[in-house]
Image (tube, rainbow, N blue to C red; front, side, top):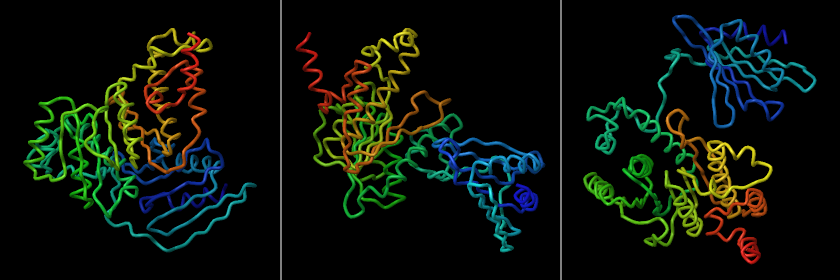
Length: 390
């Protein structure tokens, strides 16, 4: 590893743009590690960003610490790349530990680089550009500044738009996109969706916001009319009974309480929605059902059982969606310190249905029957048999 160490001492300076360490030897390692120079209290350090699945961790290292840490990391990774104003280099490490280094003198442009510790984050919505709905909803001032007390809401809106950005290839360009937002509430995210898809991306959209609160829906209707947002409608209605459309491309359900999420997911499946974005809330149903002899000692602690029930509820929802042909990801919506309701279920219709056998086994193990399973007739035969015996 002496060759790597020598290379690092050459490039770890203010001319460095980025070092990227990738191709881990085992799945347990971080997917990617990157380093960049940072001025911290007028002292040059190297900020390491360690990406593990959906999370990223940061460490600030002095020159010697950075060199030694990178050498340690390279025992578990196959590749390292250096991009600098001095040149470009690559390192490959074979299974047997053989190190191959290619060092080119072709410099990369380093003009106007930001070496500050906390670089300005790039949001989908510009935090310094006034947007009507953000002003009216109290997130932004008329001058285009984010209200300090609403900055978490602004971050949440942008995080949500990032999830939509990921699935844009799944939405049709050649026709109008129909989107249902169940439990839209004050509609921060509904207006943000419309603004992003229609105004920024140029999609033809028809977005329907649905909620049970008449005063809230009335206010949202007023705002949509004021902005001239054609194709954005709000209605008072119940998730389970809504029949206003026959085809839906994307279903959004954010913080629909308890089994209301299940009814929304059921409707999405029956419509054949291409994309589902769901942030569940108040998952109480399984907490009252769960029984298991092995886990009984754990279930005696109420708060533990409650949290396990919430996680199992969303995991089973994801499994049911998989069984209906959706590719499902469980993602972190926003940071845990801002809200405990931070799980987002993202399903994309791929048409490759999976067996529901695993889901049935989990339901049997926990002795539970989730509402979505009932609505989608999963485990129906088992329940009927159980009822006969009772």
